[in-house]
Amino acid sequence: MGKPADELLPEQLTIPNLAAAAEDCEACDLHARATQTVFGEGGAPSTVMLVGEQPGDREDVEGRPFVGPAGRFLDSALEAAGIDRKRVYVTNIVKHFKWVARGKRRIHQSPNQTEVLACRPWLQAEILVVKPKVIVALGATAAKALIGSKFKVTLDRGRVIEVPRLGAPVVATVHPASILRSEDREAGTAAFIADLKAVARYLKA
Image (tube, rainbow, N blue to C red):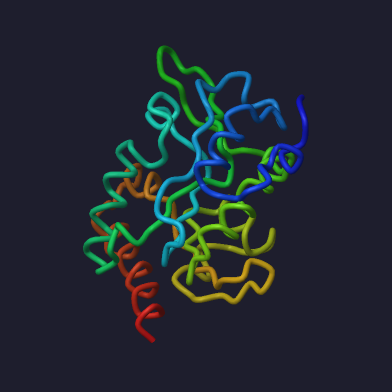
C-alpha cells in the first residue's frame, strides 16, 4: 500500500485539486484491480451532497460517479422529488471499484471497514469544499460510515439526523441499485422518492 490518503491531500482544497491528487491514491488495495479512481462531481458549494457506496462497473470504466443504470434512475428520482440536479454533488464513500469476477461480468463487492477508513480523508475534504446543507447517504455502507456503525437504514430512512462532526445533517435511504434489483421496483421507487422529498422539504424549511 502507498501513502495514507491524508498525506496526499493538496494544500489548496478544491474539487479539481482533490480529484487530481486522488488519481494516485494507493491507501488501500482496491486501486490494484480498479481501472481508475472515480472521484466526486458537482458544484462546490452545492446544496445537496449524495454519497453512495463505491463506483460500479460503468463508473469504473468511464471514471465518473453515477453514470450507470443506478445513476440514471437517481436522476429521474431527484427530478420527481423536486431537487435540482444542478445543485447536487455526487460521490462515494470509496473511490475505487471493488469487484469479483462471475463469468465475464464484474460483480460489485461491498468495501470493508479498512477500505472505508482508508478513503475517509477524501470524503472529509469533499464535505469541507462542497459545504452541503444536507448529505444524503445512499445505502447501508454510506449510512454507517457517515452516521455510525449501529445505524440501520431500514429503521430510520428518510429522517433528518444531525451529525455535528460532519457540519451538515444526514438523510439516509437505500442505494438506487438495490431498487433496480428488487422484485417490487414500483414500491421501492415510491419509497425512494418519498425519502428524497423529505430532503426537499428540509431545504425549504
